[in-house]
Length: 347
Image 1 (cartoon, rainbow, N blue to C red):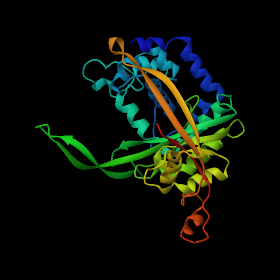
Image 2 (cartoon, helix red, strand yellow):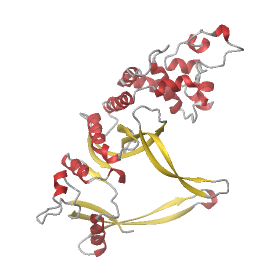
Image 3 (cartoon, helix red, strand yellow):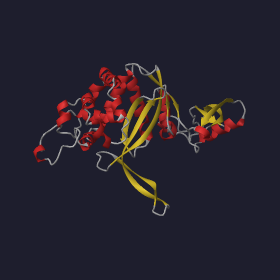
Image 4 (cartoon, rainbow, N blue to C red):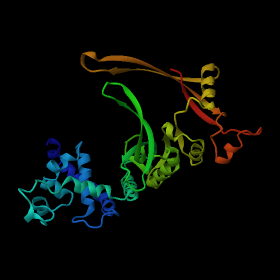
């Protein structure tokens, strides 16, 4: 209840006023849900309810009715009327109702059904539109470093247009023995780019759960550049291994964007870089020693960490780093590889 009480203070009112001032609320109000044909209140209010639940840290939807939907002040904050909160949105069927009306404005299923019926592309457009609105008020620096990542969003097979993927999962039987079984998962893949300094999102894209992350690298970066246009410049992008594709990295280079991506051990360019780093000739080594603390209470203690890295420039053993036509000529005698830099961790 402490979390709910804290929402009544001026800080929450200021937050909603900020969203209204920068134009985010206007974007959200445009989302109706293509599968929703009849609603007693504007659909945006259901979305705001779910958003408030997330902001205050409610872990379960089941807490929504008892804590949020029964609070008149908070319900009015997201647009509901006093009469709706106290008497419900509709009196139809009241005469046939047995016993007292359950507390709260609505059932949990009402919120859930309206949320899942929102169109995926509409939500994606609102998200990126909100980023553009926030960027215009100067929350980002002149140059931005983005971190790209993604996660699976599992749904049911009934989610229109979703993908499916079969994976092996570990289960434990009644005797405690582990087994691997194949499970088919339906859903979407959510990919995002966040600002390394503020951790504020720069862009988001949504694909099918079976889509590889490399299929979305250019779209994600292009969306981030659009969202930041006129207010900031995307200078560097840090990727996870899943985004590693030579032609995409070359595309980033041609657009003046520095990229950082973990290399894969099996790549020839990695073997080359490590060999040069261990040779000890004409290389520059960077070293850092610092102490970190682990544990709590009596078990806490310091640990001295030593880091040693070597910068390697002008590597020529990455055949994949270039435009698509570049890769097709990799086996020609006159093939010229594009230069690539690397940082090798020796310790």
